Image 1 (cartoon, rainbow, N blue to C red):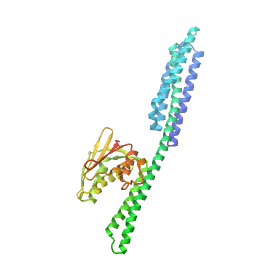
Image 2 (cartoon, one colour):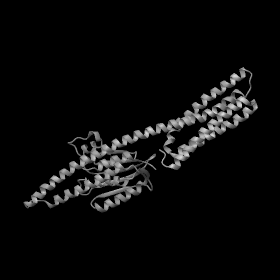
Image 3 (cartoon, rainbow, N blue to C red):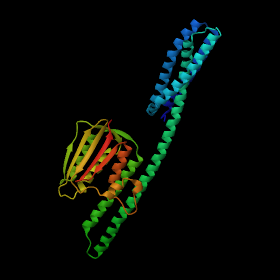
Image 4 (cartoon, rainbow, N blue to C red):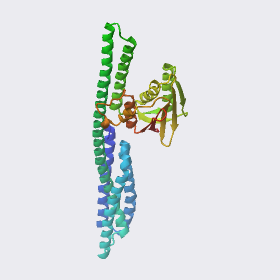
Length: 356
């Protein structure tokens, strides 16, 4: 999609120039064939043909520069240009053959083929640009529709989980408060459930941000991981967090990258039943990708929470213990990466993200 008026003006100028030069080239060829000698036709043709190629290349370059997504359709534009050149080129060659049969020599058959093909090249290129624009627009419309459906499904999940978990915690609080009146309540239990409600509210806010935000940023995964693990290690002093990172690991990801990393690492710490949890965090550069891997020695992620990554599979009887895993899953998907989770002998969560 052309994003501003200046870009629209450049593209409009390029397309208009392409059309104008195409018409002029065809008119020139026709005029030469009808009113000039063979030598004049030959000279004109071999000047016009390279000019046609240059004009088409410049027009296509301007068109792609205005929207880099169009580069995916260059093959289609080239195919249309080839078809146009072949069609009119054959017409020119046929015209030259008929002229020769009638004894009229206005350039050789090769000259006429090249001249007419030059005009066909431009016309075909223009048709190719128009065809590519229509296809790109349809593709974006379909993508917007799917994204809207995905957003609605995700927000529905957030609402259902929040309602379920908040209702459970509120029920416990209600019981404990009632017990306080009978001098049999547990203040620590109340505090834990209040903290859990605050955590759920924050996770819900983060999840909504991931669903609604499609911004891309370039970040250094090594720097982000080191910063996040340092902050979490300062809070969870009983945990042993080991970090291994390269000097640099640039990634192109969604703007919630740091939040996603924090969720994975913190979950590995707080859901570990060991008094001294051990967590290993590594960042590795791959072929066009960067992998962020978090491993722990805890009990692993419950199967029903892993199943919750597939939104259609959710049932009223199975609810995730919070939204952290969903947040990470949606973040990775919207960053055009891959999420791999292993639960044998602890948990191993691996985010494979596009390298910048």
